[in-house]
Amino acid sequence: MNPAQRIPALGDAGLLIGRLALGAIFIAHGWQKFDDVGHAAVTKNFEAMDIPLASLSAYFATWVELVGGIALILGVLVPVAGALLAFNMAGAFWFAHSDNGLWLDKGGYEYVLALGATALLLALIGGGRFSVDALVWGRRETPERSTVAA
Image 1 (tube, rainbow, N blue to C red):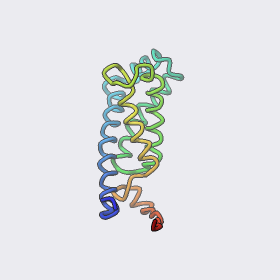
Image 2 (cartoon, helix red, strand yellow; image 1 turned 120 degrees about the vertical axis):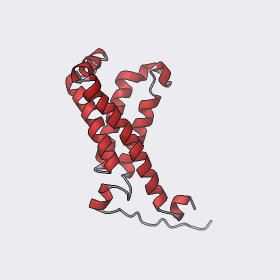
Image 3 (tube, helix red, strand yellow; image 1 turned 30 degrees about the vertical axis):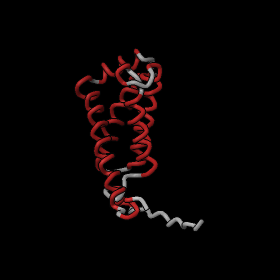
Image 4 (tube, rainbow, N blue to C red; image 1 turned 60 degrees about the horizontal axis):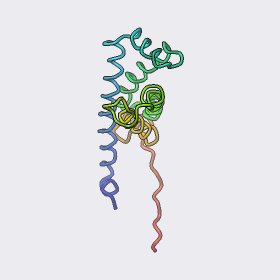
């Protein structure tokens, strides 16, 4: 029996920690696009990378990162926020990093892969019991799995 089965709150605490960390990272990146760099500069960078609809894509990336990060921290609409953030990271992978290999120091995709995979994990699992989603929608219980003796 794994520790999360013995102490059910451990898994939910792990989801909370993951949501807080990932949310903070996405908020920082969204805020950087919004306040430090600005929409015009983000659009220009996206145009240079041949990202379709660069201006609209710049708005999408900025606001999904900023609002999605806040949603993860609060645990609000975690499956939606996680899916949008994973989609955003798929775009970053495809348009900015895939040709550079894995390693981050060479402009590679290891960072966006980790962020995207974690966002997708949260989209599929949800925010856990320590989230606004759990307060509003209730915790969805999974049926007990029966074990068959070998």
